Image (cartoon, rainbow, N blue to C red; front, side, top):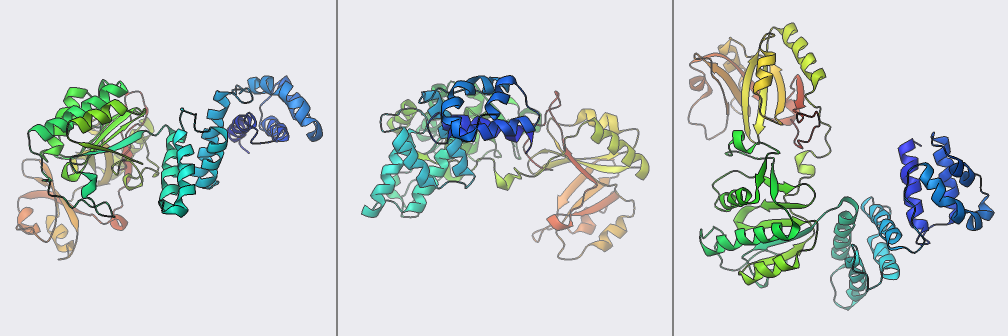
Length: 454
């Protein structure tokens, strides 16, 4: 067992003991784990030495001091703080698949009760929903999904989320598809204004004064809207307006873990807050919109965005390695992904690496490829009719361009490369793309906060 794992286990057991969810002997075992993983302390050693049969009598007198030895919180038995901590521990077990969702609601109903108004109160209600299932209530799988969403909210600080639309839920079929007659385009008038005013209301109720632009996509201006740049709420609302009108590319607008706005297709807007926002819900409804609570935004950053894929930061070690690679090869091609679906290309020579590095966009995704070749004819001969490639070439003026080939191309590769002085063809198929190096630029403080993958 690693030291951090022993600490986490002791922390969780202490919370569960405070609500009588585990025995005192479990805390003695946890103290032993802490000692053998290089934690120490007089009270901790005393706790570890308690015999199992005397644990119920001795642990209460030793636990607070033992936890203090390793910097862990102590919860008085039955305290609201202990209940909240235990709830979070059990919610984490549900998220990890170690506990059934229905078991969590049973526990919440028994321990919290209907008078509980803190985080997790929804679980008590959902326990009643499970009971109503046999009398034409929602199927268990749907209740499980809602419990899981609530458990995630408790564990990771997830937010309350609403789907904000102009579409009446009464006009949806059993699969949730809208069957009404409302236009899917922005009216550029009162309804659009209602969307913007409602988003502003949610932001104000949450206490948000600025938002960060995350993962912007073309055709946003990277010089203004690079990943992570902070903008005022008013500026964010202008971006929401543009996305509602389909005038700009997509971006997520977020204020850390406190708040987000995601704009989807067909006038769907998703708003999330760390707190419930009843006044904003009423405001939206008073302005003709529908604010429906949902588990999460379909545009939340997740698996489709390579959330769990390891990413190398473009730190000093990366640049030293790139310098050596450039020297060994005489030159390489650097792809700078400065915005989703947009790249800039740089031919690197050993003497130009430092200068190019200084011009890169914040949080850019970097891919290093073999350099362009002057044998353009060989590049053309290597292409097959059904190839899916990105052509990259340098024209006679030194400008580097790129183009994704496709069936609807009206210009052939040969015509496109007619004036190229050097070129290459890079497959767009995942299993055929093999860059020499990849990395993502960290922030100036050295911390990698960009979430995308090269």
